[in-house]
Length: 385
Image 1 (cartoon, rainbow, N blue to C red):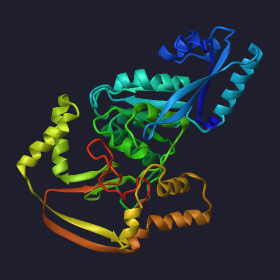
Image 2 (image 1 turned 180 degrees about the horizontal axis):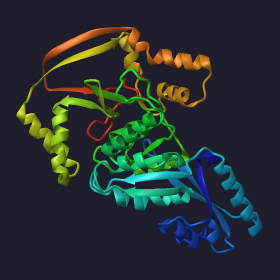
Image 3 (image 1 turned 120 degrees about the vertical axis):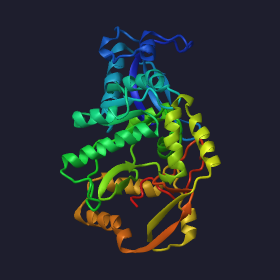
Image 4 (image 1 turned 45 degrees about the vertical axis):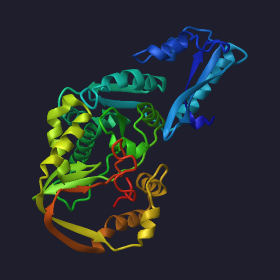
């Protein structure tokens, strides 16, 4: 057990012989719904319980605990204070703003948050401001009106649509605060200083599947508690010199666009609405006419593409994220800028005008229950290209 995996140390009076008989302290942790300071616990506990993370299954983590028995109450208090002090030195969030979508997926967002997420936040001594959204763009309106700098992160409990709404609002607010015109496609956009977290409670949960490798709410919560982060690629959509929105999972025109639009009228069906809407649009066999212009990078060896797959602990994404977040000197910053504009200097224009069924652009790998291995294996979610 590594100390970096420990998220909390609490007093405990459970019997080691019968650990299923929870003491007052552990019952408090299991069932409380509001933040309770450890100082409010009764005096004279006998043990210290360490709560730590362990790997569970494939790409998932679980919370486990171990009991330690000191010689006396004075030693116990020293253990608790010292352990909490060490934990507080790690760079982890202390204040979070959480938006819960009660209508996404199977409409279990509130239940998932109250039963699985909130107790873990309280255990880690994280102060949470929770907002249950009541309408579309509710989270966007709130983010525009409040000072988000007082929070260490913004978390959404929902699906890809909820995450996209929060991502767009945070990015646009950042550009506005920096005085950057979002409608100018040639402007370099500012990166937000506040991280975003996703706790899956939607229909497909493609974004969180790409980033963590699973759609498990507990694993996602524990990653947020530990302060794990990674960069992701974001695609800007412009039309006629005007900014429309940012996209993360995929951008589609044609078949998928009609599926998403029609499925909004069938939310009462839950996740099955995508299957029904998709099948209905396949039967229509509608074709779309359009022109596609591509800026293609210089060709590279296809063998290296096949071997460069984005999986868990991807080296490409890890190095890019490290470059973007860590302080940089002038030489590193110059290298980063040259990488950003590399594709603009070595390009080949390709025009395609034809009838087609769909056009799709995928900044992420798009892992979900419908695409277990992703849509494109060589796509990296933090490659900056």
